[in-house]
Amino acid sequence: MNRFFEFFERDWFDPLIEVGSSYAAQIDGLILTVLIIVGIWFLAAEYIFLHFILKFRAKPGRRGEYIDGKNKRHKRWITIPHLCVLAFDVLIIVVSFRVWYNIKMDLPEDPDAVIRVVGQQWAWTFQHPGADGELDTPDDIFTVDELHVENEKTYHFELQATDVLHSFSVPVWRIKQDAIPGRTITGWFQPTRTGTYDVQCAEICGFGHGVMAAHVMVEDAETHAAWVAANTPAAQ
Image (tube, rainbow, N blue to C red; front, top):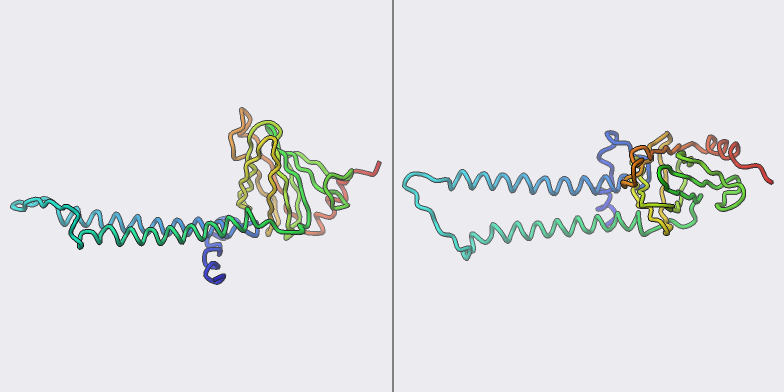
């Protein structure tokens, strides 16, 4: 069964679209699956539609026929496609639920680090663990519009909003999660490619929504360790 799902989890868009997280390929594969299924049915329906228009167009001497839909031969043009559509719907639902479960419900245990992401008008505040690797301790590192993570490490993030609804979006990771005032939403990601990538707010949140941009720096182990060491607050 797992080998069956591998087809839908392969990233067919790479390298046209950058893939930067462990589950980005699953989302891309799901989108491509829906695109192919819907595209095939669209082309088939349009072909049959045009074929019938040409075949049964008005001609001199031909009288129109009244079709009541009771003829079994006529019914097959409805029932067979209907059953096929239902079968493909089930396939899409199964693949979609698998992707949803892996990303939203099956939170990896024992992450390498936990970070906090706070959205406010109109900036992102990121709280990183300091040298002790623990969040909410005196050596936490706070940054605005700049997130630093280590490549190939698994992170949990605690997403919050201080004022209005925001949406934490990192396109290269295929993350888009609403941030709701008064709630803490936990998610996860595992970067798979180093570099600097965009972070954006994907929910209209007021006058400055268009400038609520940030960046995530995905670093190798040595570079990230040096950044943590250089930015960890000195002990009081």
